[in-house]
Length: 611
Image 1 (cartoon, rainbow, N blue to C red):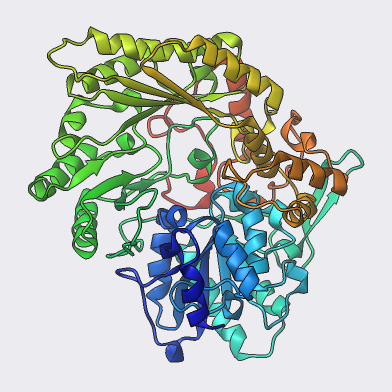
Image 2: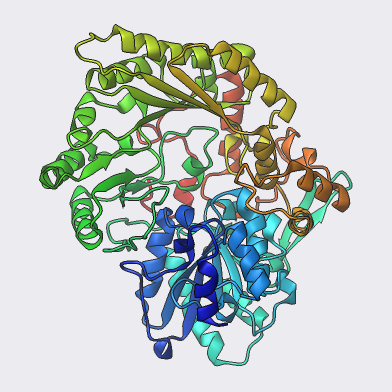
């Protein structure tokens, strides 16, 4: 493929910088010294993928190996895809512009179910056989990882390997055995069988699935000797000793999250019952304040960024947050480097932090009450009260903020119309709190953003047994909430229930959805996570053509002992614990923070000293 031809078409597409590469801190290697070429593939556009922390970590980690060259590839936008197909250009990496079909591995990160059609499209653009069974020793191995990989069954027809858990340790093991296999004359299955014996690696083709007449699963069993019936996720026990890059690529264009990111800890101890991340990323493991300050210093020097953020599932739960924030501000305030703290909890937010982070510039304040009434917050085990919200926003308004975003979900289990109206009432309370602040202390121009997403039941959560509200019910609730919100200071936005419906189908789906996915792609499905490209009629046609009912996956309440498509995957949290939490949710009973009282979720089974 001519690199000159690529350069030629870049002048004919929007945002050509997405495909150029050559950014500051991009890794360049001599291919003569490389034994393994790895394409890290993100199934969305460049600016979304380059904002992903996991890609930044693994890109530089793999490139620490002298025998490996990790390069990046993203989903081309529709105009670029058209040009590539018109000119016969295969999907290429940013680093060398080489076709990724010539690589040893193509690894997709699965962050969102609605990106699955892009995976199929990227394989087709690469001229890599779409079905795993059609690949030969001349083709790369296609692997997936990330949160959606814990139920990768809808993609089983298209992938060779699944990395379960945190990949920092898994990837070295996998590449080491690949290097040995590559020297010999073994078959693809020989390598896959060796890989399947690595803890944290799942090979779908080596597990047989059977179904009952009513469509439910009957069994999941390995079809090769010595393979485990249950595959355990892999975890990094000590974050201080875990790899984190000293430098990251600095793009030429604005990203979704364009700043230095410090990962302060992994896991969450709160136990929100809707939250998949809070379950699959257990246990909590923190980085030390000293380590984080050192990381910040190296990353800021190597990138030139003027903003940094602290990344975790619940930043305010970091035990050393006060020392860390003070330490960062003391070091970087003179350089006018700002600090943002996402993932803040209302019940642990301190006015002192507000005052610290506004010293350079005001970053946005975003909170997630999730539900409008205390009853429903207890159902989902959110663990915050209305007074937490009012006291926090009052502190923010007194400190000079005039804009707050509030995130909610609609369609949660046991939800009533009073819970829906409670969202509007809570937003009104925020407005009232603003006006309760002395005029001399508050800034003018109040804006309260209210965002209502549709609840999607996810695997490995207590709500994996729950059904999703129908699209009609969700639309009615959105309309009722919209009519209830009449205050000029409140901006209301919502997510399309059609997209959430398909998300639920694939989040709880099984292998039979592979043919639906393939058919939908043939009918034109692309960028389904983007509202302007998602077309429900394409998916409805695909389901009808394949003889499957999507409502079977999204709208059906599961029984206690039903076998799930992901039951052969062990994330540490036990199914019995999740069921108990579901029953407590239906009764409106809460479970405390597991840092204070162990709730016996099962995570200790994965190793000593994890909690």
